[in-house]
Picture 1 (spheres, rainbow over the protein chains, first blue to last red):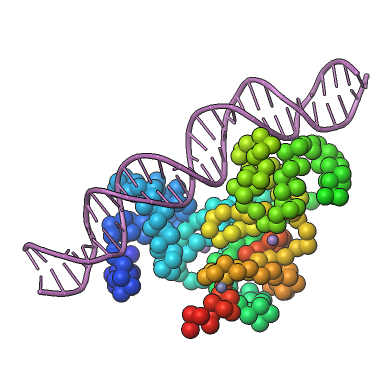
Picture 2 (cartoon, each protein chain N blue to C red):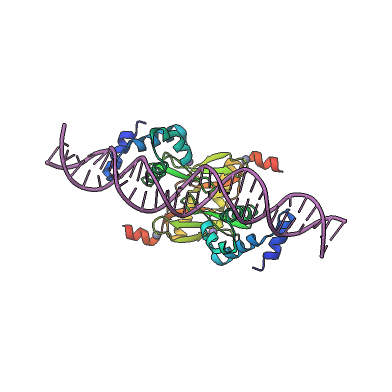
Amino acid sequence: MSCIPQLTRTLRARGYRMTPQRLSILQALHDGGHLSPTQIYERVHQTGMTEATVYRTLEFLAGNGILSVADRGNGHLAYELSSEAHHHLICRNCGAQMAIEPAMLASAIRLMESKTGYQISAGHLTFFGLCQDCQSRSQ
Amino acid sequence: MSCIPQLTRTLRARGYRMTPQRLSILQALHDGGHLSPTQIYERVHQTGMTEATVYRTLEFLAGNGILSVADRGNGHLAYELSSEAHHHLICRNCGAQMAIEPAMLASAIRLMESKTGYQISAGHLTFFGLCQDCQSRSQ
DNA sequence: ATTGCTATTGATAAAAGTTGCAATAAGGAG
DNA sequence: CTCCTTATTGCAACTTTTATCAATAGCAAT
Ligand SMILES: [Mn+2]
Ligand SMILES: [Mn+2]
Ligand SMILES: [Zn+2]
Ligand SMILES: [Zn+2]
């Protein structure tokens, strides 16, 4: 977690504060990859942190661009440290995951922007489909 | 709801049953457009239906392709009757929505399929961005 | 019309997620 | 180091969603 001092400065510049709660959630995500709020709570509650604080902190850090949110497809969310942009491709059948480089969507997004006038920030999309194994198994 | 007899036959052919609960949820969505489980419950609970039944029925109908699910971006889901395929584009700032024709993504999806081997079913995606109004207002 | 199988529901409890508010503590100023 | 402002937290009530299980009722067959 070499980035902590920089993150602290960023937050303070925006009028926010660095706290032990925020630090331990960042640490948990540093170790854990993609985690749900419940998984994060399991890993930090021994410090006395409340569920409410976990949910608020995740929303706060995501709102400040420090975390990325991913839709898990069932209406539940997963959080991860923001790093290189990427999307997800999940197998509906077995849950296997792949990362998708944003470049693959670039021209489609440009097209959508010119058609709609929106400025699209396609941060962290989730696509669903059938992986190769599940395709052959089902046919 | 002229499609009810056909839907009933489809379900029975799969070993399932048509029930008054399923009918009134379909009716609510026929009138309502995109609705959350809570909104649907408000519209059907006078019939004595439970929340549990609302959630189960929505999941069941979506699993059978009769409803489509849309991620609302906040970890909550919205349901609608499956009709023509489309995606959503939502303004992060004001919530304004636009529909996206699937054709705009077709070539990107073909590219992802050939790179990953997955067979992608991009049923009902949600993109986020800033609408034109919110762009000009913020700068 | 009756029967039997079992998919579906309601009731209930548990889990996950949200909200309002008073107490706490981060961190800038003196 | 001490004081002060106010962002942040814990607490507790509340809403939303999921899971279990016995009772109900769709519907196919007779
Ligand atoms: Mn990710
Ligand atoms: Mn839709
Ligand atoms: Zn698979
Ligand atoms: Zn807008």
